[in-house]
Length: 220
Image 1 (cartoon, helix red, strand yellow):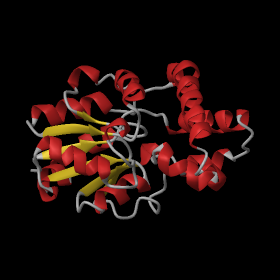
Image 2 (image 1 turned 120 degrees about the vertical axis):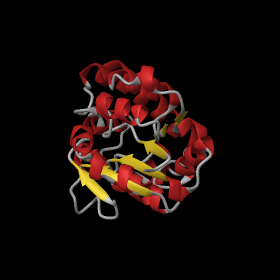
Image 3 (image 1 turned 180 degrees about the vertical axis):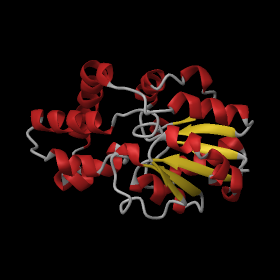
Image 4 (image 1 turned 90 degrees about the vertical axis):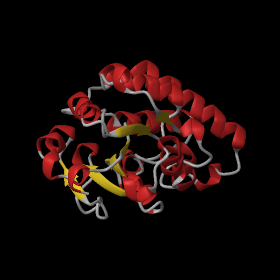
């Protein structure tokens, strides 16, 4: 059995990737940048610091404008999209099971601390979460490994003692840079091909919970 689990939120505990993508498209459009929903959607799982330079290279040196975009996008997401969000199937039940197994666990998300607080309430797990690492705590977000490193440090665990739970290729890249195994979930909207590198792939938390006794969580 692993000693600790690093848990992503968007797409993993909350069905929010599509909403995030739409909020980015709308905000960028208001600033005069036309980007396709499909393109933005393909980058979900990255933090804004990683995504924006890839989407719009000319923004890289426009620090003030980036700050304005980030502020407006967060405001739009929280005011217009959060109310539409739902937990992924089995999100709360899985966290309760991990807690019952007495395995350490920590949230490891690229979301800002403000958004994360809201998302954990949407997932109906906020009362079960004691330890969090967010995009607000690190210099660079996923797919850079900063969040994974910070989460391991907070749990006081070595990479081989932990496993990560995520839903995007960028979770997999970040975990692999730290030599942390990862279980991927399809509920984030990425194909199995895009999730290559995960030690296991499940439909959602409910599916993982159903098969937890044979999963790497127990059998690692």
